[in-house]
Length: 167
Image (tube, rainbow, N blue to C red; front, side):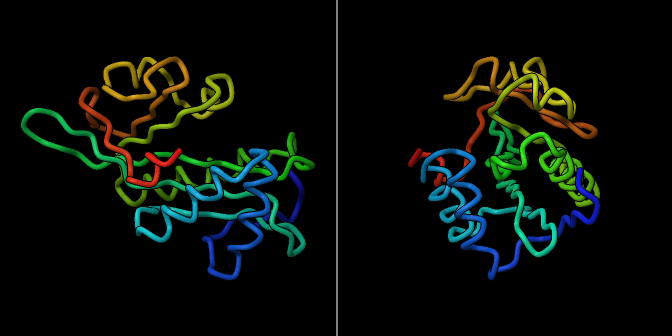
């Protein structure tokens, strides 16, 4: 990781740079629209940016997720998306974003995080498919992974923010 990398909360003036980084990282605008919709609908729980020498290198967003079971529901968070400028891959920017976010989420008493992504990458942070295997989800499969901090549901239907249905 580059010395001087700063991880801080998203600010409104970051929006255009975030759109550029997310579009470059994913090669399209679907995730850009997702970020904008999550933010506009108030479903964003935590949004951070990685800044180095006043340039935005990366972005991470966690949105509200519900775990619904027969008699109750529980709050959780969904990590989506995590984006790093392609020319900064391999510099630990993504690692810094995920670790900073996890620390903040734990201190905010969040108990469960779910991600749909590369098991080799997200496994480094403790996400596993085994932890997510009991959830009913349209994206159920090896890429669906979860991480819990303390007691959290291990089964039920995952209800994502409405913005995800546009993907």
